[in-house]
Image (cartoon, rainbow, N blue to C red; front, side):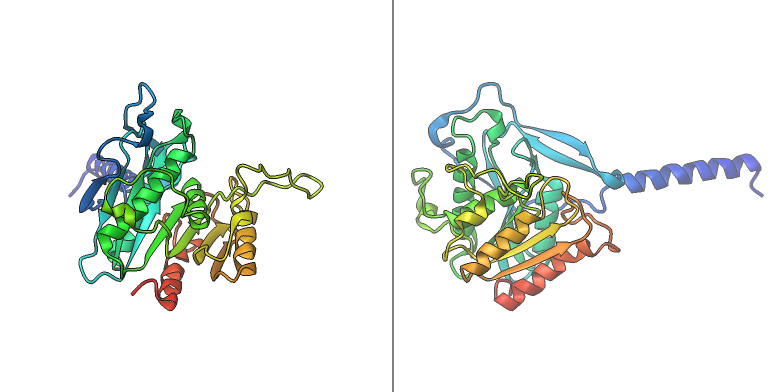
Length: 311
C-alpha cells in the first residue's frame, strides 16, 4: 500500500509532467520538403548591411507556447511543404513580425503544415528585414516577395491556382504586391522570372494595410504621396481577397479590413471579409476552439473551394 510520502511524490511528478505538456508545442513540426535560395548569386544590389548574422530569437506566447522569430536575414529562402496526396492548390505564406523579425513558427510553418494537410503546396518566405538598414528599405521585401511568387509558380506549374497569404506586416506586402505586381524590382535571375508575380488571390490576416488611425475628431492625417494606404491603390487587376480581422486588435485597426473590402467591392473585385469581436492581434491558428476566430481557416477553405482556388 502506498505511503503518504509516495502519494506526495507521485502528485509532484504528475504536476511537473502536466506543466511540460502545457509548455510543449501541440505536435512536432514536419520539415520542409524543399529549401530554395531566392538569390543564388547574391541579393540584388549586394547592399548587405555590415555585421548581420542570421539567428532565431524566442518569444513566449500565451498558453506557454514559444515562437521563433528570425533576424539578420541576408540570404532569403523559400521553404516548401508538399501534400501527401493530389495537389489541390498552392500558397505563398508571408509571415509578419513588424519588419523587425520573421515570425516563422506561428505565421509560417504552422499554416504551411495545415495547408499541406489540405492538399496545398505551401511555401514559407523568410525575407530580408527593412529594419536592418538595407539601403532599399521596404524595397528589399518587394524584391523578395516578387521573386518568391515566381519560384512558387515554377514549383507548382501553370495550372495550379497560387494564392498569397500574409499575416500582419506580411499581409501588407501581399496587399502591395496585389496592387503593383508588374513593376520590375530586380533583374531576371533565371527562367522562373518569365512568370507573373500576380497572386491568383490574396489572404490578408490582421494585415497592416497602411490605413491611419483616426484623429479624435474623426479625421485622418493626409496619406503620404509616396506610400499610399493599400485600399487607395486597389484597381481592377487586384486579385480577389479573403480578409480576416479581429475588432479588438490592439495593433492594427479593423478599419484596415473594412476599407480594403470597400475598395475591392467598388472596383468589382471579389472579396470575403470576416470580422470577429475577439481575437486580438497575432492569433494565426492558435486561438482555442471556443473562440469563433479559431474557425477562420475552415471558412477560408470553404471560400477557396467555392471560388475554384482549392481543389
